[in-house]
Length: 405
Image (cartoon, rainbow, N blue to C red):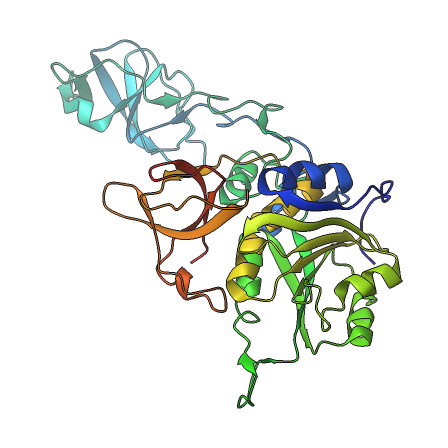
């Protein structure tokens, strides 16, 4: 069963919800999934459930930021000792006043060092029968020492709760000696594609169409940080749909494609009523992709029901999938991407228009050719989906949802 907290009190179904209201509705209706401790290196796409704290100073000691010489005293000349300070070990060298020793990037500065001078700022020679270095005329007097705790100190907050675990978070956690942290997610989903007419393999019979979503929908879900545990294809059958929704699973999400309409073959709403599910949202004011449904299932999972047409399903996935991740993992809102649309048409009927676009010369964005929603040809050259709310006109600044490539 899904690892989800106590379900909240049921509220009336929200019908025809605006795109900019999805986050607020889901945050109010869905409890976050439980936290877990895990190695961040294995949690790409999860969300930090608490701040990431440093467990050590960085650097842990004074080190050389450049290849050069560790020196004791103001110079401008120093006697050079035999030996080299190398990274990852102590040299055993101690500098007295007026002495220097060669040092490499990342090496611990030896006791007595007052500065590190990079190689290109000094010239070599001899003084009193010994090897010596001196500052070049006009060379800057700078210290290329990375001081202990210069980047952060033990106990510092490195990034707050709600941050997405990406490659930079994983790397910083390793540097801070905090490789294990509390996270939520990444979300896991069982996926179902329905439709008597959909065929994945073999020859098409009259009236059948090729499955254009099964092999790519997991890719778009992963772009939203939703992993697919398994993908099933079923005909339009009431009993089979109910059986699939009753499966025992540890996924947090159930994602279905098709059956979101009100036709004779659309059994989803009837099945949800039978099993006691609570429909949270029935329809989003967007086109394509508006015929979608979100529900809380009796076992605590959240159902995301996508429309059957491929382009509509992908639009709904990218718009609503990101909101589901934010609600269930309490992820902080990321910085949005925005662009100006060169050829935007004004949306109608108070619905947000979802438009595949690509960036062209001059930095503006232009719509790619669209020929209906029954395939993904409009995404062939597209780099993002533009969200065009009511009132959008040519040159309007609109939000962009980058597409996975």
